[in-house]
Image (cartoon, rainbow, N blue to C red; front, side, top):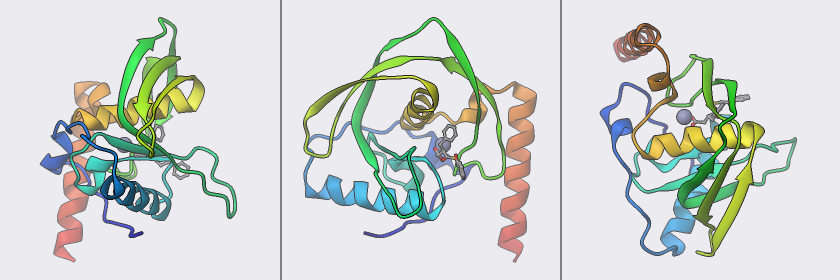
Length: 172
Ligand code: K1U
Ligand code: ZN
C-alpha cells in the first residue's frame, strides 16, 4: 500500500469524467488500498480515485476514524438511484481544495448502488454526513468540485487563492 500525492485545484485533471471499472480485480483492490492510505495520510474522510490522478469510478470513505481503528469502505461504479426532496446544508472541505470550507446544500437522504471490493452489488440508503460525503465524492467522478456549487464570486475567489498558493509553493 502506498500513499500517493493528491491533486489540487485548479489542476485540469480534476475536471475529468471518470470511467466505469470493467472488472473488480486485484489491480482495483490495490488502487483502493492506495486510496485509503492516501486518504488517511491527508487526514480526510473520503477520496475519489481522480484525486490521485486515476480517472476510474472508485471512492473510499471512512467516517468512523478513531485512534487505531480504520474501516475504509470502497464504492466502485457508484450510482445515485434516489434523492430526497428535503435538503441539508453541511460545511464541506476537500483535500483537493486545501484550506477552503463552505456551506453546500444537497439532498438530505439518498439511495445508491455500487460494487464492493469483491465485485458484489450493494444497495445503500444514507443520510447525514455519509449522504453528503457520498454526493461530494460522486461529484469528483464527474469532474465537479464542491466550490462549483458556490456562487460565481466565491468560486473565483477560491480559485484565485489556490492559484496564488501554488505559485508561492513553486517559487519555494
Ligand atoms: O473529497 C475529499 O477531498 C475528502 C473530503 C470529504 C468531505 C469532507 C466534508 C464534507 C464533505 C466531504 C475531506 O475529507 S476534507 C477533510 C475533512 O473532512 C477533515 C479533515 C480533518 C478533520 C476532520 C475532517
Ligand atoms: Zn473532495
